[in-house]
Amino acid sequence: MNFDFTQEQTLLRDALQSFLQDHYTFEARRRAVLSEAGWRRDIWQTLGRDLGVLGVALPERVGGFGGGAVETMIVMEELGSVLFVEPFLETCVMAAGALARSGGPAADAALERIAAGEVVYACGWDEAGAGRALAHIHTRARRNAHGGWRLDGAKQVVMAAPWATQLLIAARTSGGRGDAAGLSLFLVDKNASGVATHDYATIDGRWASDLVFEGVDLPVDALLGEEGAALAVLEAVRDAAIAAVCAEAVGVLKKLHGDTLDYTRQRKQFGQPIASFQALQHRMVDMYLQVELANSAMYLAALSLDKPVAERQRATSAAKVTMAKACRFVGQNAVQLHGAMGMTDELALGHYFKRATVLENEFGGADHHLARHARLTAAAALA
Image (cartoon, rainbow, N blue to C red; front, side, top):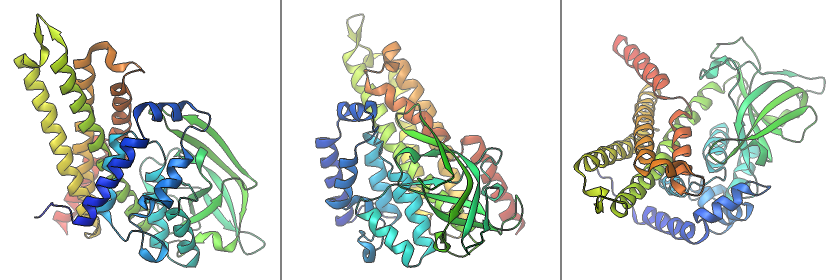
């Protein structure tokens, strides 16, 4: 199998690398995270309007690059290498993916605004008590007296919601909790009457919200796609998001390993660099092997997104397990080899470790995906 990038993909990577090196240094990121806004809207708009990165996987008809999973993988790895806090995953992978699969004029108009950097989306799918089972969503949308919808329910840990201009909410329009049919997707104005938000910072420098919907009236065209048929869309988008965070993790892990290698070459004990100690050399080789395993998992996930559903799900779960283990091993060893300074706020490595810890568990940790992979493999054997 040929893993070489095309000329266009190489140019995309090089252009994004150059931009981030010039405009997204660690100090610039830290200032943005500590600011009142918590992110940099100018960076977001430049990536959309000037570089076209926000539309990298969107169709050309909506102003996108016309790429796919590989282009998203390239972008996410580069964003991971600088701890990018702006909501590319939530807006350009999850929301854009759901909009593109839903189709229609309203979806195309929304995708055009995403590509131009004019909007930010947050996806409210996770709920208390639902675990990772999308079919267990119980937020409810019912028809109102005006032919539109009335939304009631709550969502938790909605990443990027404090920055969002629009919310993409999964709600049940029919059936009961656990039913495959009956889930629908809705576009919701975050400032609509009846929407309550509780915003908070996460450990990795980002922001999330818990959302409550009480009698939120939505117009008829707030419904995306076919009523009651959103579960397949949600599952496909979630797998695409897993592939994306696997790519982001590779960028984080390479930085953790590289910074640790540099530090051990500089830090001296007994008059010589600690990188010369055989025990530490073995450990850094083990770290490198985990980075390479995560890199292979990244390719596995990205190249499996167009496969049949069961094969796609098995591949993304296998990739997530590999990535989660690599994040834990590389992150913990990087901190240990740096000593206590590895967790200080002044050192970039501590921030990379926190992001690796979050990525380890985002969209389900190793235990969840091992169980999912086993369940899918058993079902395939019985088919």
